[in-house]
Length: 191
Length: 78
Image (cartoon, rainbow over all chains, first blue to last red; front, side, top):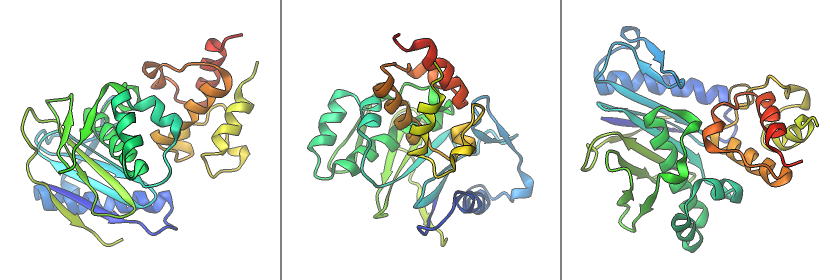
């Protein structure tokens, strides 16, 4: 299974990010599942999450932000979120973090990076569920340990953070009961 | 009271668009390329400024800025 990531130049427009996401989707479909883009058709679930029509064992999810585009492929429902590192918004933090998470963010050596770890993890879970903004993310609780292990109160999901990129945090979520996710190959694609 | 001017002011802090691009039927995610993170920030700002609480379960119904205007008008403490 694969996660394809392209770092964006600062000047990239949202339209260019979307274009790159489509390119990564085409590349990844062939790499992960051996299918050509013409052989698959996309459909949207009731919340607007794109799915591959007629391919129940093939899942993907797309995320983009100012600094990167990421597409995750797997054989179970998945979600990916990517966030550019910047100053965290205290109002967003207050809405989405529980008390223990807030304490860990404030105590971290880099509180902004720590916040975006939690934010992207929560978003990756909601995106894997495919239910959009309606999900109460404060109730999805995480703890990121020093060895990068991730604890959560969602035992039916597995999570991973990708922090190989200086400007972004990427979180991956697999909806798979118990245990760790299968290893996902990180593929860096030129912009 | 029409809340749209206040909503517009807050949205303009997040979206790089002219004020004329912000209308009642504007979908901030689709039309302004804002993210869910931006939207959470906008809602947080409006809650602070207007003394209203937007329940998480209601956010999915707030598709357009007009929806947000109607919601705030219905829930703001007079």
